[in-house]
Picture (cartoon, rainbow, N blue to C red):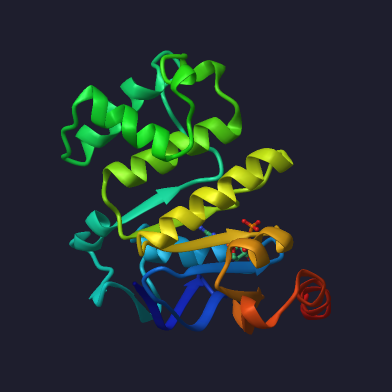
Length: 230
Ligand SMILES: Nc1ncnc2c1ncn2[C@@H]1O[C@H](COP(=O)(O)OP(=O)(O)OP(=O)(O)O)[C@@H](O)[C@H]1O
C-alpha cells in the first residue's frame, strides 16, 4: 500500500504540492483528478523517487521513498505512452524489461503474462511498431506483472484509448485489484475514475480539495464537483 504524509514539493518558490495526505490500501484504486498543472505528475514522481520532497514523506508498504531507491522494487510505473522497442515483438520486449528488473521467465511464462494483461495470442509475435496505444499499454501492464509490483502507478491511462480499449483496461484493473495490487492513477477521465476507482481525489493548485469514496458518488455528481472545484 502507499501513503503520503504531509507530502509537499516546491519548485523554486512555486508550491507544486502542498501537504498531501492520502492512503491507498491493498486492492484499492486511487484516481487523482485535476486540471493541467494541478500537481498530479509531481505526486507520482515523488512516489517514484524521481524528485525529492520539500516536506513530508511518501511511503510504499511502510518504507519511505528515498535516495536508496529500495521502494523501486515494489512499484511499477505505466506512463501515458509506454516506451518499447518497435523492432521487437511483445514477448521480446517483455523478456528484455523483465530481465532489467532481475527476473528471468520462460517463453511460456512471458506469453502467459502478456495474455493476462489482455493481449491476444495472435498479437504476441507482431512487432511493437504495429501495436496500437491500447496494446502497448497492455505490454506495460505485463511488465508491471513480471516485476510482481504490489503498487502500480499510471499516468493518464485511458487518454487516447477508444471505448473498447478503455473497457478492456477497466477489466484488467479489476483483475489486478482482485490480486490485491494497489493502483494509483492520474487521470482526466471522470467516467473511468468512477468506474474503476475505489477512491477519488480532486486536486487544485497543489492541494487536495476533495476526497470521495466511489461507492458514494455517481459520475454526474463527480463531474459537478470537479467543475465546481477547478
Ligand atoms: N521541473 C519543474 N520545474 C518547475 N516547475 C515545475 C516542474 N514540474 C512541474 N512544475 C510545475 O508544478 C506544477 C504542477 O505540475 P504537474 O506536472 O505536477 O501537474 P499535472 O497535474 O500533472 O498536470 P498535467 O495534467 O498537465 O500533467 C505546475 O505549475 C508546473 O508548471
